[in-house]
Amino acid sequence: MISIEKILSQKNYVENSLKNRGEKPPIKEIISLETRRKEIITLVDNLRNKKNIVSKNIGDSKRTPNGQEIKDMRALGEEIKSFEFELSKINSDLQKILLTIPNIPLDDVPVGLDDTANEVIYTSETEQITHNNPHWDIGKNLNLLDIESSARISGSRFYVLRGKGAKLHRALGDWMLDVHTNENHYEEIDPPFLVREETMIGSGNLPKFKENLYMDSETDLWLIPTAEVALNGMHQGQIIKPGELPIKYVAKTPSFRKEHTAAGRDVRGIKRVHQFEKVEIFRFVEPKDSIIAHDEMLEEVVDLCKRLGLIYRVLKLSTGDIGFQSAKTYDVEVWSKGTGEWLEVSSVSNCLDFQTRRNNTRYKSSQDSSTVFPHTLNGSGLALPRIWIAVLENGLQEDGSIIIPEELVKYTGWEKI
Image 1 (cartoon, one colour):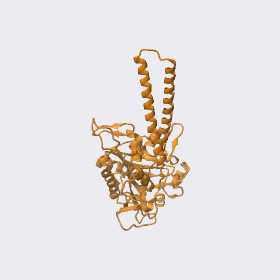
Image 2 (cartoon, rainbow, N blue to C red; image 1 turned 135 degrees about the horizontal axis):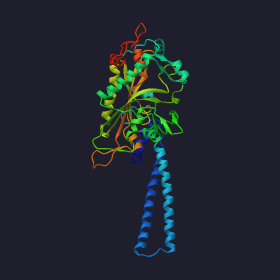
Image 3 (cartoon, rainbow, N blue to C red; image 1 turned 180 degrees about the vertical axis):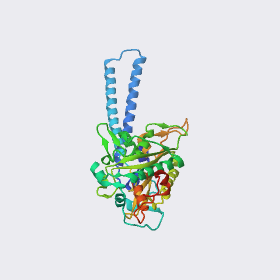
């Protein structure tokens, strides 16, 4: 959430920055509500002060208040209640508006309203070979992928992995977790997959993306669209103690998404589904460290692609393509040899203090210092099943078998499918 102070003090900058995202925020309405809010606070303070002075005078004189004084005190009380009711409504209206406004992009984010303005900043190989054997054919031929069974079980946009296909999927997730915990020093978290509404609001998924989320109306619990939601909620409403930052979490969870916004896209195979697993890395850092932390996390993600022997590229997303809560995002994509396209396997984002303001997550740099909102960063490290797809299509041999990356052999127990 953007601070109201920033909107007031940098009105033109905020308005232009959000315009670059394709947004038209109600800045005038926000300023009007905030102006009235401050007026009411002053009025209520003055009325309370007046009421206190009258009460003190009556008390000091050690007499019983007369009828007119009682009437005046009641009138003051009713006036205060009326203003407090108005103040409560204004606070609620302001909160609702602010929760719908996306983060302000950092100054080095490419300006553009869609993905055509994204910048490719690195490609590992200049030549991308295509062999026209997509993963859905490879998986079916080797009995690794069973779309027919998943359709019977759950309908479209689900999948069943079988035998070595399922074990390869599990091996990828376990390997990623081990790299992040053993080498990159993240703490592994196994969080709930169902979260409260305020946790979804804190991450930035509600209220804007309600239609793309699954929820249980009886308990008002929401299925996470990414582990980022749960990891971001680990310290909601808390003050992180001095010396504890940076905090680095990693989790492997299912992700649940309705994919309404992707209707008609990627209908074949398992590139875009309602349920998939993903390893997520997440950091809480001091504001001064978030730019460096962002670069570190990008390198951690890229390193996984390198070690799997995949062709990859890194994109800096434009103002119109970054996520709602993001101030800056790098996408990492791997080459799909079977369909001749780039598959996004990670988005690494710096959210600044946008999420911690929504969550009321604060920290102290010392016992005597005031509280500050830390910055949060998140990234897929990496997303399945798209990495599974890339490993299959990249490792395909002329005889139809699959050579798997050396990094995974100790997790699978075999080198070939």
